[in-house]
Length: 282
Image (cartoon, rainbow, N blue to C red; front, side, top):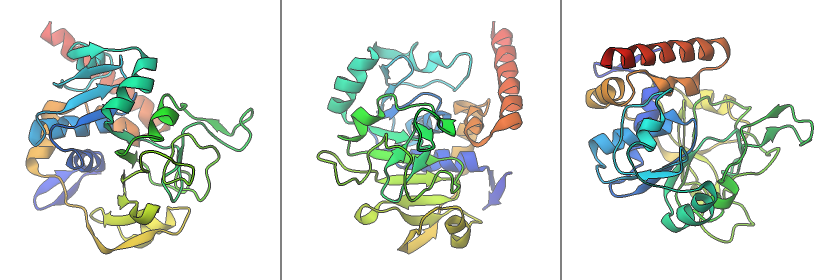
């Protein structure tokens, strides 16, 4: 559903992308994992607006590049491989490149606790027979125990994700065992923005139309609340136009907010549009 404020119609996926872009500073190295179009769109929005000197580090092909291309599904490699300055092996990236670059990276947790520790392994305490197997950790355990710029995003804010205690630990937050780096600095969800003041999750901004009670009901632990709690600034006309017409005209970013049949239908439609567009161009 599109929301309207100050004569700008926007959707929640666009607001999340804009909030991600606002966390990016010019000249930074930003890292992005697989199947994270909200993050990719946010980085590209920052590149198109206030951060033209970014270094993009992508898990797609383990590549480094400095220019972007519109998001796609069948042609997603064109963004990170066709324009790459250099490509690396996965082990080199996880064990050497990222620890030395210390990039800013947004991770999407399956579960996250009050201190920003997170789980991408499985739901359920029995590893051999979990309730649900999650995508896995990739290089998350190697990287999160040394990075300073860990950022999190949750497209669908529910008590399934925000939990008092993790089933498994894959991403290190503000954990007593930490010896290097720091825990997450920031989290964005479809309901608000959060920081980790004193090592604990604290809500700092409510998105337009959301109240504090709604957020607390959907969170599995008591939230700390910033004394300066405010409303998230909505997207500008320029930001919305860039997302819809330049960065992600197929709206691939929406896939992260959909599930089940809606996701399958949207995926099929986006692929058909992408194929038709490529045929027209050829």
